[in-house]
Length: 475
Image (cartoon, rainbow, N blue to C red; front, side, top):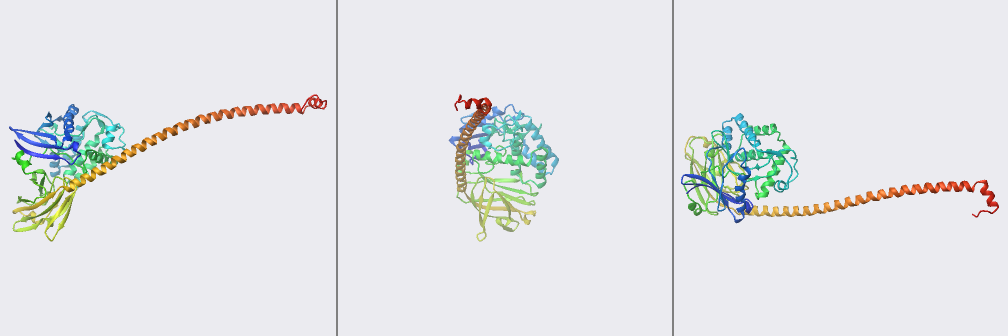
């Protein structure tokens, strides 16, 4: 067995932590997903069952097999929509880029659609407070429809290779499109004109700024629900370069835990083809990395120092011809990490805040047509990830407690509202009784007045006065 790739999805709640392995055996390449913890068995079964939910989709699916708590897929050969789009970006073909996004939206819409209605499962996972009523939704939604999970053959037929997150309640169709595009944007540094193209497409498709804000809130709630403390996207099945020509025994002997990836570019656009990956080994031990860079001009370098949250001690240099440059002197910007440089010792510490930290380097000498080499010495520590995870779980528990208290308050409010309604009904009934009594009182008063008038007429009459003098009546 040759193991090509191993990915760990462990920055989640225990019940969603899995391991994905791409391997070749007897000339056949396959992909397996297995539980990383004893709590994740149900999640593996859910992935398998998602095939049944999606099997009537307009898009083909990689067909799974379930055996011994492991779900296995065939490795689908082809070019991903992700790769086609980034080629359009590299070639600055805006029209082709737009056409592919619109085509993808059309493909999503080919599945059975219903109107959005609020459901309890939706609110549990994505939260409340949205105005989606009446929006187009899919009856069955695969929100993992990222571009790198969609493999196209020569006839442009799509095969979906990852459907980990599938739901059978209404989810706005435009959220799935938004999530796919957001994943693509987070993966590549797109030129501003392509970001403007995406913004224009959103406008053309009627996806307003308010909707984008709501979709972002949905994504944050979803990542909180599955236990991420950062926004992450799955591209497990795309890459087969890690651990190539190694085997499982060697992999575990090396205690491999993710990798460092180095990108180089002549046009400020990065791609997997122009990169290399180096396995990271044992935690808290120094690792030395040395590799040759292309002799052709390099405009920009990018180092992704790890695939997990960590703090890392780092030093290194880049050799161009006869000149050696300190790595930290070339850094121009970072994403999702902070660098604390020790200029005296020419080293530093990299503290990442996500599983995709990025360091960008630039120097005029890199543009020379000459021999180039990079040297890196590093050691990493994952305690920061555990601390962040613990802090996140603590806050998450606090939020749950507040939600429980809020539910109790809502129950009390509902009870008070019911009592108020009952009292209001009593007030209405009493008011009606009072009105009836008032009417009877008015009628009695009229009768009394009439009798008074009759008596007064009698008393003042001549006959009454005569009878009174004759003492024939008593007063």
